[in-house]
Length: 470
Ligand code: NAD
View (cartoon, rainbow, N blue to C red):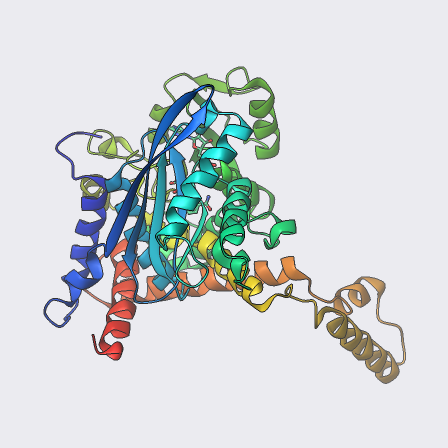
């Protein structure tokens, strides 16, 4: 990122300020909402390969207007305090936008996970978790991490197990992290949740013909040309569902080593399998390879999905972006300055604080499942199926002929956990998009979806503070 651009945290704060300027809040309240409440930095060592290795990590709590606070833990060699604070702030706004009753937090460990084996990563993760647990920065009632870049189910299981061994008396111990493996208290559909939420968000945009027309496009998702940056958890799942359920065409894929392009469109499963086997996108059959992958952000397409890391569209390349719609699946992929350029150029940006909220939404479902100690659907699935069978019998009696088998199967089906999670996620993403779009269209001083998303969050958090009397 160019050095004269604001940092990630300053970028988020400037976007916040832009939205606050459209509101009339009591003096001082906007600052209280904006500031990070606290941050814990820890240095610890782990003995590995016969030497002592020092690691540095952070856990930032941005807002405690709701508890617990929620936010992923990121493992990356570039993680720093500014990033962690920016991501914690985004978590606060994200939860408010999709009505998930949590405050915002984020954690980071400065490490390149690819340089350690599984056993070493377990030692490091458990030690980091111990340090955070000792200070109350991991706790099912107060502070609940989830996966982010460089972490996944495995790390969440190690952290939860570390917490449980230190607090065996806590009956809700397992709710101290979300994004766990299913057999360790996780929930169906969590791994795919952020990407699936991105798909629902983009689908909802295309359901809104006025927004589609304002972006200079027409029609629905079918056949739309999509370029994605990042084929990790979020990028892979978002494009998989866009391709499989939305009938969109994924024409470009950008990864660390380069990018591939094909007007025919890719099968994401095939590309991901190829990259997993060969370690690179280069030589993927039938595709054009571009060694300077980032250049493909500037290629012609209908929807550009940055789903890798922050700071990818900056003052340096913003003017060359051709996509009319940019769907921010990653956190902070567009800097504040680039955002201004894109807005002036009339681009539609579906903002990160809304679009990637699917992960925290399903994390909320997992947390509730853990606190209630029962899987969703366990009590009512069979009951629902029986009720469906009764309706079929009644129908057959009334009309005097059998209901066709395909309808019978659908009517007598009882929803399982995955159905319920997907339904809750789709409803959450659709409702939040509609509110965001409505605010943008109905208020003259809210010129874009990002400002609308911030306005929704700020109004809700302000109300919470005012009602609490603080
Ligand atoms: P991930 O580590 O699974 O995947 C990131 C992918 O991006 C990797 O394939 C990596 O090789 C690629 N990448 C990294 N730098 C790149 C670069 N410069 N150019 C091209 N590709 C690059 O991470 P993820 O969980 O998919 O997260 C991606 C983004 O989504 C992050 O901004 C994260 O904060 C955000 N996010 C993730 C979740 C979640 O549930 N995992 C939830 C909300 C937001």
